Image (cartoon, rainbow, N blue to C red; front, side, top):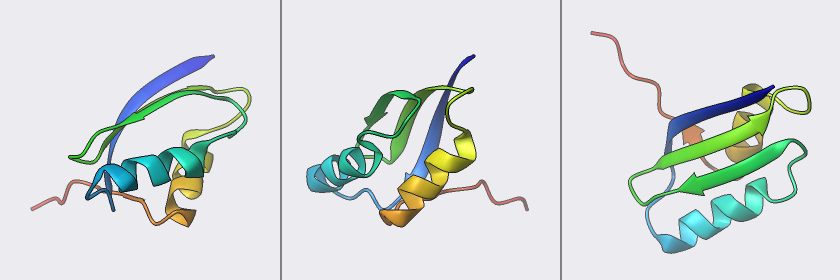
Length: 73
């Protein structure tokens, strides 16, 4: 099943960071599309039968990109 989500991540400060994130995710089995912008939004689409949100987050974390979770007050 195809899943899509936009995730806010830390670690993106410049165009080189966006390219580095692309390299981190390049070839990830099951990932269909990944687009990042300079404000740290990463739009992902993946095949849920071949990979998971957690696996994608782990791959990004290995490259120094961490999901920003909204702080509860």
